[in-house]
Length: 204
Figure (cartoon, helix red, strand yellow):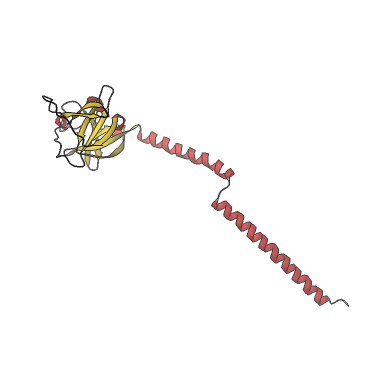
């Protein structure tokens, strides 16, 4: 005689085992795939998203350029009590204080000459034309080597600060109180509650 109760019990046990095994497989596989998608996006998704991100970046750059107009990068430095800037395109290099050879009967703005890698060029104190005196030489004193279309010259400055990107449309004419004997000043730009005086490298 068939024991119906025993058969039902076995059937129920088997169904529970199948259900349990199936559920375990689904959880393990499903969770593993989801984690993999979150942690390591597939190459297909990455390839599709990358151009979109680059395009957004380009659009942002274009908007900035449109809003602010053309910009120039300037090297910022001190001579005496004033802050000056020169277009970075003309700056060949910046070197620490270097032995300067005095030149007899040289003009006041010429501090002497230096020989750098076999090239001799003058060292100028452009503060002479700007109504500023160089401070006493310190470890911050620097020589800025400038290359223009005409020549290579070197200027001595009290301290070099940083480079600064400036919108050209925001450069203003210098006030009448700013001394400029040689026409060196391009304009002025508000900087840290002072006027940054921007110079023309070609005029040095």
